[in-house]
Image (cartoon, rainbow, N blue to C red; front, side, top):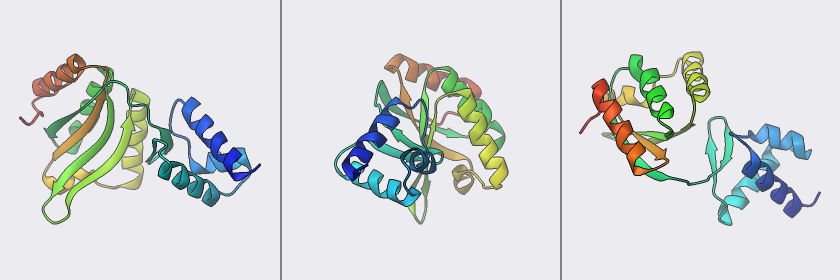
Length: 168
């Protein structure tokens, strides 16, 4: 398979995937090394393909709906409830950011869209013993959300307000 055919196959696979696809999975399917896939992804992105890297693999970005942000403050104990509330309303939690006093805005890609994603994310946090970004800012953090419409974004804000964690 030639390089251009391989890149077309990568795009096809990412467009039809229902979740993130790892570089290793793509490499296995296309009989090349993981490093070749990483290079192909870089070239595809440079040519304008909306491919995003997440902790679980690559996704072809389908920006449907509207993008919004919520600023919340809570301890790590409330993380699960916050994320489940957002995905149950139909929002995708695309990322989390904190404003660090030295480094500025630090952002982590999440791409959490359902309860199963919430469980996987929380398990990764537990397994790694890593602290969430919000630990750097005494619990204050910003979530970038993709919601089906403005009404859903407002429902998400109201739900977080009712939980007592929305910062306004």
